[in-house]
Length: 105
Image (tube, rainbow, N blue to C red):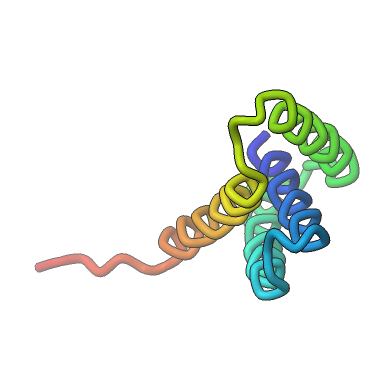
């Protein structure tokens, strides 16, 4: 489920802010993006169990941190930035889909 992945990304961004990897502005951008992403997916499927998805996202986030630490190939700042970029990219995609297309004549 895609929403679970975006929740995990959002949780990572929040954690990164606590560890000074991202700014408060980055966290606010992620929060704004997550609100739209959540609304988008909930509108598409109102049967989504948000609590269950949030628990799965926390598990995914913890697994991602574990993999990052075990491999030592990913810089923490890059990891944080990638999660933020995922959210912002999805927001742009949602906004682009919501923009009415002009038909050419």
